[in-house]
Length: 68
Image 1 (cartoon, helix red, strand yellow):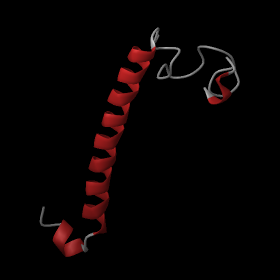
Image 2 (tube, one colour; image 1 turned 90 degrees about the horizontal axis):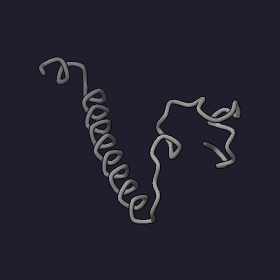
Image 3 (tube, helix red, strand yellow; image 1 turned 135 degrees about the vertical axis):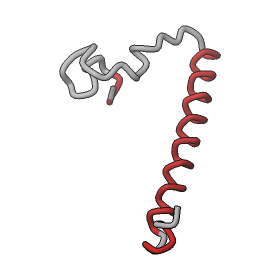
């Protein structure tokens, strides 16, 4: 939630988002939060890599891309 002020992602109150933030994932210790953030960063890097591969394929000339 922006601002971490309890108003939810769009200022409409708690439990109004998609359930992907800290409200849905209780993190009671510093170590749990660190582990969660490391795993999240790894997943984001993997997704970014896949997106970059797809972007490169789409930027190829039409004749090269259509052979796949």
